[in-house]
Image: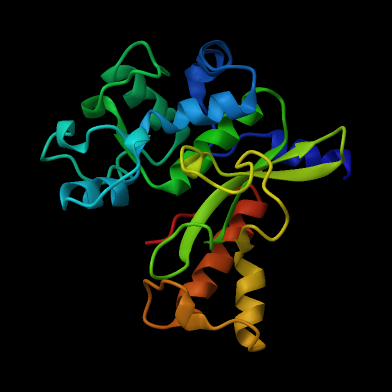
Length: 235
């Protein structure tokens, strides 16, 4: 990997720039990446987990008691789209910042996209090249394969990109979410090409757009911008 490319991924974007919180990211999080990632996840509830819990569905106990989340709180993706915004609200709700015992009512209600962005910011704050990726996660068990965003960082000793998924790191997985095996995550372009050549069934994937190709094309576009270190968020 060329040093110019690594420097590209060390740099902050509008979304990953932590602002004045950069020192706190270095001070308040464990040096071990897996410990840091799991601690990050304990500050966040995914909006679908919140919805499922409110409907009475069983959820992972690690997500805590959903009934303690105020009734009026819904998805907060649109309120805190950048790392600086997420961190400002995180410390506003609980000045201790990243803590294991953050109360449910003080957690952020954010999707995987923003956990991935936050993890990329944490890595960049440590001088580690990092990038967000968009695609699909077959290991998230639902009736369809879910669209999902994860994070990658460059591991210099092994000269490879390591894929991590902090957003699902509290779930039981048959793999290490902080060093995911190849082909565990379906990157957007791979799915697009496989559907086009007939090797994957598009009906197995969850779609939010009018057609499968519209949805998958949007994921490819998002992933393309992620690789440029300039994120866009799907509507």
